[in-house]
Length: 115
Image 1 (cartoon, one colour):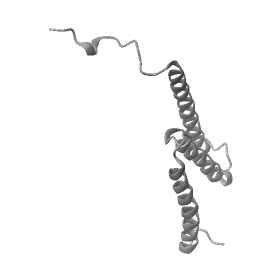
Image 2: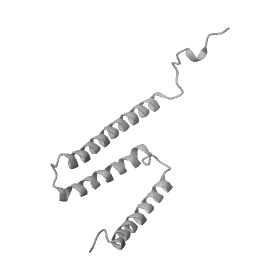
Image 3: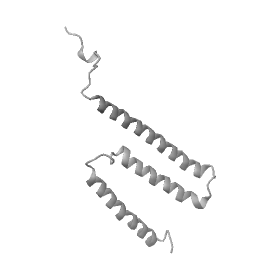
Image 4: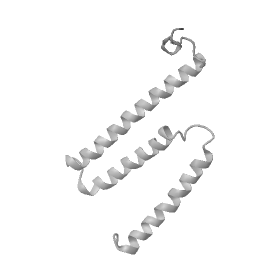
């Protein structure tokens, strides 16, 4: 009976050295972005819990951090920075431009915000 081939080490990869470098570079970027998003989440919790930001500025500050996190999620973890994602990007941008006025109109209609 032959030795189990799957237990042997595979030294040669189908990837070239340049592809390996690019992959390692991409992994480092994703780890950095993940750490940045954890930091932004901690900042959001501290803004509410520690009261070092005035209450009138806390909600816009948290929303700003949420928008930054949303953009980082789309760009790095949904891979919209890669090529051939033009249609997905176009649909998302269109959805944002339709959703924001709809939410604002509903808030005004319900009376959450009175102007």
